[in-house]
Image (tube, rainbow, N blue to C red; front, side, top):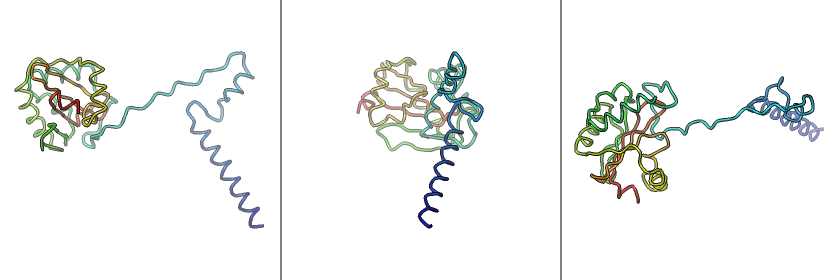
Length: 191
């Protein structure tokens, strides 16, 4: 009797799991026919909805303020480009996390800092550079993402390169909030 009870419980568990998983599957609900039912009950099958991949979680998540969008707007990105060119980081302060991770590659600097301190230090560094290009070669950026500093040039980050000065910088986001600032020599990015 004990063995049949165990089999019965396993059977119930499998059925319950199947029901739960079917109910959670994208595009399916108890009233939505399965693709095979759809094909047999109508002359044309209803296509399943396209499932999009959610954005990659930020390596530097922000808890305060909470991101309000999946990514910065085109206008915000344009403002951030102007910040990099001018080295005036003040316009970024209202769009940055309370704690911003600021990293200068090949140095002991700096790690998580309060927003204002990180922005001031980054601005000081930007002020010594020139000729920023905001359209780096995609193959070069793809290569960087296979090396040691990959976490600082994630998909969705704003990347600028100064070939004259041989450096790059990136602004890293959690949703639409600035959470990381990174700078490195172009040579270091290849290691």
